[in-house]
Image (cartoon, rainbow, N blue to C red):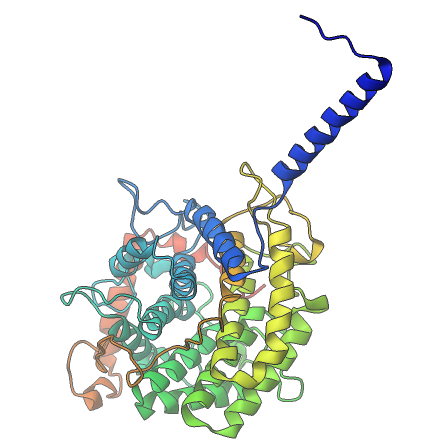
Length: 474
């Protein structure tokens, strides 16, 4: 039967249908993301986390546990980025209580420890930087501080893994007198980029030392942290007038020609390390350094209150690695508010505004909700990836910091992770022997091992990584 309507009624009916359809379309187009309440934050974070994990293939048959697809040209991602991703997911678990990905975190971080349980697996030797190794070590440290479930007793423990990474980086063969000290970017001298000494390699070492000191009370870690800060200041990577932190310099030129690019994670890693030291020592010097770095970071990396990677974003030159940095900025600044509460009034409102901008542009790709990188535009930029998702997850999950009152634990305040102060030094040896001078025989042996490893991976790969790998040289 056909229903006949008068013209007036017909128009009203059509308008009604159009309004109803528009309402449905608006509902369909409405963002699933919000940070208006604790429940909203948790829901948003869970969706972003799920989308992030779609880039991970290591839990599939035939794939390698722990890594993202790569390194180039096999995939977009270097080994370090997966280590950073697991740290992001540990924070997500700690702040949200969602244990969905804990089994993947556990399996990944145990699979990649390497034969000496110091996060130096042989298959990444040709592109292994001190910062790469340290990102995995910092994720292990975070697991200890967050009381992430301890591994089985026959597996490497979180605290011991962090100590192993630190000890390998404190060993004499990682340090020389070029530029008066400091870690090289790359671990092996045959790797392209080895002459570069940079802020992130030394910042990771500083940060890990500060946290190990706070967790264990062992002053060896404090001594190294102080030494590293002092070197950064002396060489000019930390600008003592402005509090800018510059990227690095060529040690073969005495670090005189400083690359003045500024990346947000360099600021954040030193600010957080300083905060841990103030929390542990109550030394006003570290409080001042924390506050000065935060003041500079908020002004520089949050123009108009939204995170921007100033050295590459506006120019469109950000590499795959750099797409992760804003997430570290959010995560590490959030922890600073926990352990140096005086910073919270200045940090938290800006992080909230930045996070709101971040989720607003998550409207892309096949799902219509995946995230780009240019948060400040408010519009999806057409490109998504693990780094973009990781950064937004970090920002959203960080909004939960402070709601439960929990701060990173120590060995005396509830930490359960087992440590080994000699981890990474070849076993339970005499600490004095670990720090003996390197002999000619040592150098010859190390050179032979390095040569063999590089030959096994084809040699050439070591020269492929500089163009895209982290801040580095331009």
